[in-house]
Amino acid sequence: MIKMILKDLRLSPLRSILTSISMLVGIIAMIASVLVGTLGKEYLISVNAQVYGWTPTYAFVITESDFHDRDQMERFFQTFESIDDIAAITFSMKEDIKLAPMNTLTPTSLNNLYQNLMAVEVVCTTESYNQVYNLPMTSGRWLESSSKSGSRLEIVVNKKAQKYFAESSYAAGNVKNTLALTPFNIVGVVNDGRDLPTVYVDSMAMLYFTPAMWQVQSANIYWHSTTGLTTEQIHSAVNDILADSIGGHVENAGRSDVGNTYDSVLSILQLGLLVTSLLLLFVSVLGQINIGLSSLEQRTHELLIRRAIGASRTNIVTLVLGSQLILSIFVCFAAILISLILVHCIGILLPVDSPVGIPSYPISVAIIAVTVSMLTALCGGLLPALKAAKLEPALALR
Image 1: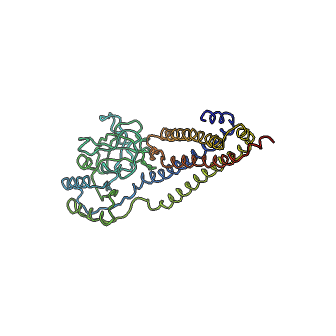
Image 2 (image 1 turned 180 degrees about the vertical axis):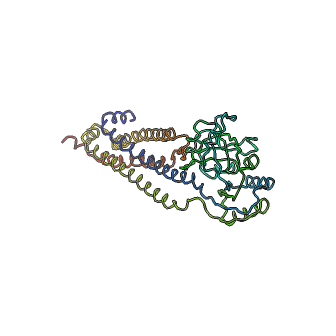
Image 3 (image 1 turned 45 degrees about the vertical axis):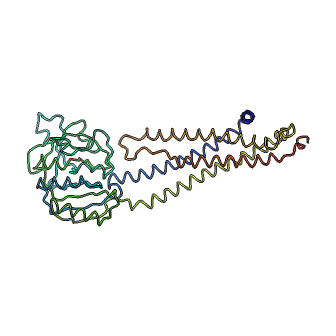
């Protein structure tokens, strides 16, 4: 019977090709539409997380604290490193920090360095800042705390600042009230989504090794909650940490991420893509059923002859239904293979510092698409098969 079914498929190549294309398009279109929706959703979330932080992130402005007591500041940093959630701290300076590119640690001309000093956005922060914000690395690595990096002053520059520093491995830093130049080691380039040249530096290293630059006016705590804490609980925890370390009080508190603003957009996007994928699958189903019924009209005489020479009704049903089933199995395997290659190609085409990660293969959607296509193939083949089985052999003599 298997040989007969395979022979039947070879005898009707056009029908086999049209049915295959209809199924293939339906499965791949459904998987592709879900992939597009997933990428769109991830892009929206990831790009916003570059600037505003992962959802949910809470911001607290700290003032009137003793930012210059090293022992208390060290306790302050260590306490935040030990919490179950993720929190980063940034410090606002009274004086702007200017930087100039420097090729070696022993430059021959200091005048050129002073002339090239440029005011850039300096984010004086902690090691966990890249966990609160989505900051993929273009090259190099992220900041390490002073305990890991030793006595070196390290900075990470964004892509806009990289154009200014070019191929320089070092930067010379300076503040308005001093002539001293402080060398920084450039350890990485980050894609932070900012349009302004921005430099990131470890705050603990600044406190220890550049006291002239450490002129803190206020601090900001960005708390990314991963344990489900409420705003009030986090606010209380921040107050307790301040009381046990540098003192001061919280001046402003609230959400810094914008997750709430695009939740409705994501819901509409997902609904739209779901409807689109179901419509594509529905069109594919109609195509398969139509091809099955049309092919039956063309094969009526052939099936009548088979009945006349002794083929039973079961044989006719098995022939018509079996060819449809075997064809659908091959097509489903081909569709899964093509969609896997598609997902792999997306991962290859994404740049290294893309804010969006490589999409995972939508296994559940693929299972649904394959299952629906298989059921459609069976249903689409069953109706013609039952209709063919009812044909009377005597009609073949007319």
